[in-house]
Image (cartoon, rainbow, N blue to C red; front, side, top):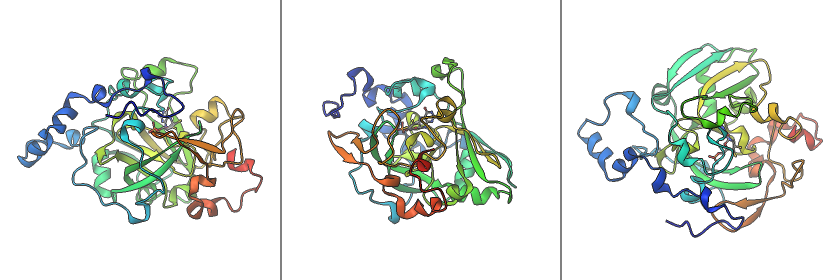
Length: 324
Ligand code: MTE
């Protein structure tokens, strides 16, 4: 355990939850080898519902996509990324990991809806069986000016979009996430516009980068990361990467995200990382690298311009257009 190696901007001690505190009993048993034993004897997988408990090892390990094997920076220790989370459904501070263990993530059904041929419900395990599950190391840049590098497990959003067969009129993909009164104390804060919603254009969704995440660090997605399925958009500010997704809609109307609805003058639809466009209340030129004492310069599109800059070529080149 490396909890003495705190980042220089000082996460308050009360917000740094040792991993062992929030590992549930099931995960502890898995850590002791119970899961492997049970799987080998055929006892561990009675049905799809219990096949992927959050935090257990992802087996067999999916292939690492060679195009995204190296994010140009060291991978952030899980002790740091797994104990410094934004997940407002569980609280407005970073130390929500323990509370998030109450999230009912297994079994999980996704509703696919709107302007597509495959509208309906699908169990997560059934969807995973159709998708090219792989591992990718991506950088993540939060709008609060901190960043991390995580080995994510999942599949390209583009594969899901192609499978869903959107109609020609569909222009956006909208993501809606879980609202569960029993486990999520944060949703009692009624001034927030629950549920957490985010969206991208169809062109953005079909880019190879957007990733539907179901695991990290070789494990089934731990709950505080947004179990059992979340989005990751590495060139956009982290608030676009919605956690614990329940609905994916194909629509001709631009979705209004959670933060955009709350404070549209500060959080826009595009939210592409841009060091030259400050947030109204702070600079975006630098970022604190989570798990280290380092600061690093922020890169346009978080360094993924080669992949995504073409998406915005026709937009007004006013830098603010990248933000709003
Ligand atoms: N998704 C939901 N449902 N609720 C949230 O509060 N926070 C967002 C995003 N997705 C959030 C969410 C923000 S602001 C960030 S930076 C990332 O999740 C944080 O992801 P992480 O905790 O895995 O670092």
